Image 1 (cartoon, rainbow, N blue to C red):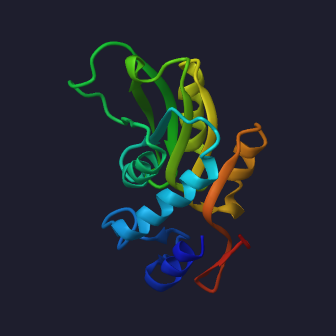
Image 2: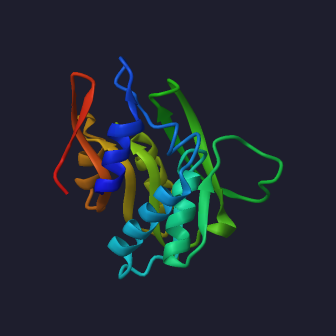
Image 3: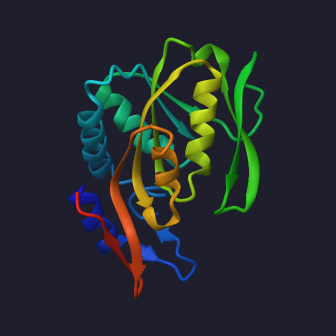
Length: 191
């Protein structure tokens, strides 16, 4: 998506650690017009796939997932990272390792919210090593539901997480696929 790529180049920063910082428009402060366009783009890609629910992981994926869900006309669920008193009953769970935070945690969704009849589109802000995406896929499969596809705002393709998920047969659509960082500048794959 050219609009997102331009925004990354204009307002994003690449930190020395290789982190692509987009906190001024995507995952800390959110530009609703940009997310509206992203949601429409993703919905257009998956419009004929009979999606019944959108699933993301808290917290950075929530904003994007909400715009995708609105465009598709379906509800969205976010997997929680922390146990909470407002989660009652049984849960679907999966383990996820966060490379950014260097910790493993368990994600959970109430069983009553994700059922075997669901066709799920997984949405997230970043795809690097693929741990969060793989965990979300595991969670959906544990519910007996179907992962219809995945949509990612920014994929760091050189880290191979997207390749790993695609090899399982699950389609992954990335709005901005960064092939490499050269001299602090992201180089994108052709759309």
